[in-house]
Length: 176
Image 1 (cartoon, one colour):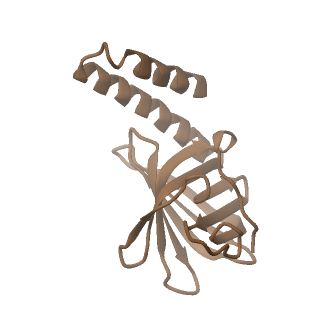
Image 2: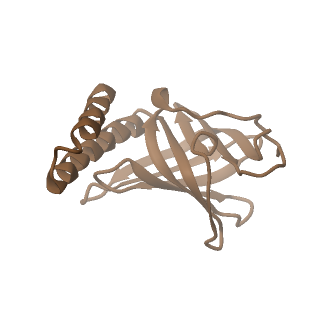
């Protein structure tokens, strides 16, 4: 699947100058569809990472962040939630934010009639007790994850892409 998406991406880049606007759009839709299928398979296998490029705070403020240091990752029964902001302070994880490891429970992926994915899971660990809700619309691997801690109301939303765990390029900081 990865080879197909890379090949389609290369074709799109090489032939973009020769293709009409409609043809480029159709080719991009095909690529997005392949990435969606790849993301769905990764979620079903419990082996994915949502690499976030945007953080939305409780009251709607947003910040653009590095996708290799802001992520939610699930591998089997293990989960990692990491946020790292572009600030001078190192933070508990050494990257300007927080990294927490936990165990996954209540893993419930659902696909609605339109083909949109909704995934709900709980993550429990030494530094985290939270409900995680992921929504990915049909036809893309772009997704939104809302992290709702069980002991306070400091909800956080991350927007980014879902990729298979083996293709993820995240950098994990020190865990709490």
